[in-house]
Each structure stands twice: as structure tokens, then as C-alpha cells.
Amino acid sequence: MNNRMLMIAEIAIMSALGIILGFVKLSGPWAFGGSVSLEMVPIFIMAFRRGVAGGVLTGLMIGILQLIINPYIVHPVQVVLDYPLAFLVVGLAGLFRPKSKDSYSRRIWLILLGTFIGSLFRLISHVISGVIFFASAAPEGTPVWLYSITYNSSYIVPTFILTVVLLALLSKTAPKLVHGE
Image (tube, rainbow, N blue to C red; front, side):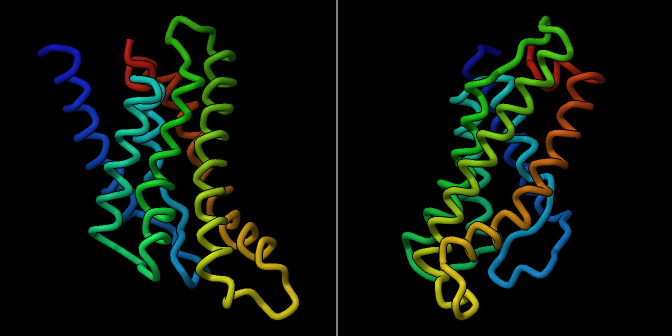
């Protein structure tokens, strides 16, 4: 199987895995969506295995599939911000792609940095959506930006932490899975 076909197969498998992991979630007090889950892990794995292209394409697929399976729709622009774009930007973690030959500590730093960047850009996408489309949910007297950042951080930050821990464990126990070499 040539490299391109292998990458397409990996994207399909990781997209399906992301959707499955998205069903296993900690639903908390979030009224407008959001949950702590491991759905971003396959996006990060593809970003670290295949670089930005693999991560972005996997994120795009997961975002589109999430939209099809479990949508929360207020406006077409909100749909783009909360689904395809929010997951697509997670793939930017591939900019910090570690190699399996790197020392474990270097791999962990790159995984931490890449996962932070991917999670941050997802957070930014959701925050913009929140400011534009969910401003009416902000408590009276609370700035809309602060409300949106607080609301979205309440699930993105725990998801980021859980994801980093899992990716660090996978990098130690299954470096070929995470780094694809």
C-alpha cells in the first residue's frame, strides 16, 4: 500500500475512533454543548504521526462527523466555528511533531506544546462562537468574552490535561503508534 493510501486509511480509522471516544464523555454543567472526552486524541496522534496535513484532515473529518451525529445548531457560521473549524485547528499540533528517535523528555515537551497549541486554537474557535452566538447566556453584568472563555475553558482545559497524560503514556509504551516511524 503506498504512503498516500495508508494515510487515507489512517485518517478514516482515527476519525472513527475519535467519534467513538466522543461518545464516552463526562457531561457536566455545560448547557450549550461541551464535554470532557478523549475525542481529540486521534487527531493529535495523526498530527504527530503524519504532520499538519494528517492532523488537520482527521480533525476536519471528526468535526464533520460530530456535526452529523450530534449537532447543536444556532447559525451557519456557528456551525463552522464549533464543528469543522474547531476540530480542524487541533491538527495544527503537527507543527510540533516529535520523532520516536527523540529522547522521551523531548517527545513529551513537543507533545505538550503541540497539544497545547491544538487545544488553544480549538478554544479560540469556540470562544468566538460563544461571543457571537451565545452572548445572551452570559449572566447579567458579566462581559461576554469572559463568559465565553470561562465556559469553554471549563471543558477544554480538563480535556487538554487528560489528552496530554494519555499521549505521554502512549509515547512511552507505543512510540510507533504516536510517532509513526
